[in-house]
Image (cartoon, rainbow, N blue to C red; front, side):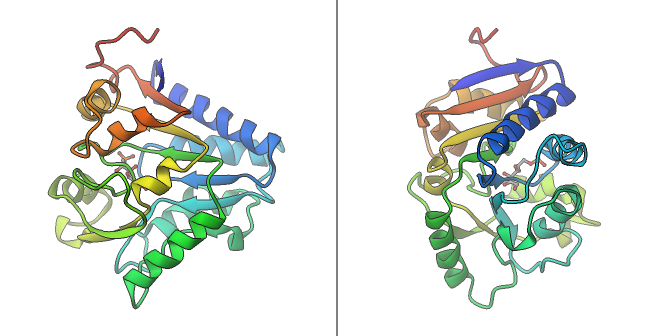
Length: 245
Ligand code: F6R
């Protein structure tokens, strides 16, 4: 793993956006694996700016998102499909047909998982962006998810429901289940960028970077990836003991 410790959220977002823009400039039809949540918002804002300033184009880019809540349709304000349109897709020149995200309203979630798995086989990510759960999850692969998992439905951990309640009017409204890309499909990405910011992530960052590689901390599997860059701010890096400067 390459670990970059940066000053703050802005710097983290800037470095991540530069890496993604560079990948898209080299390969205009790159497949970008994308995440939702608070962490990548700054990066998406910068990417939107780059496109507006004609420093990058997403015209031929394909995207695959990590996850979606079961029971929320793309029009629901808390759905990840809505999040992606608001924070990125509506402000860049990506073709809507080239953006992919699991369907949270599928009648049969298992066949939706199978469909998404086949899609990922056709569209292996040139780069996968990941946020990090405070419990070490990546995507919605909660602790003890097998490393060989593919797209599946998951019952969210208590701590995840609690962490995500901030996006909903009340905790009761947070969906309990989601469809997530599996760990093996995340690991299949050519390159992985993990972003983490704030003290709330410090324990998980330490377990991911310096802990044992174990399903108890799903993000620790990234130590086995050939090209994984972790970009963390000072607060998120505060429990690391190695020398990464
Ligand atoms: C989002 C996702 C999650 C988040 C993680 C961190 O698509 O898959 O793993 O990346 O829960 O969320 P934030 O960035 O809100 O702290």
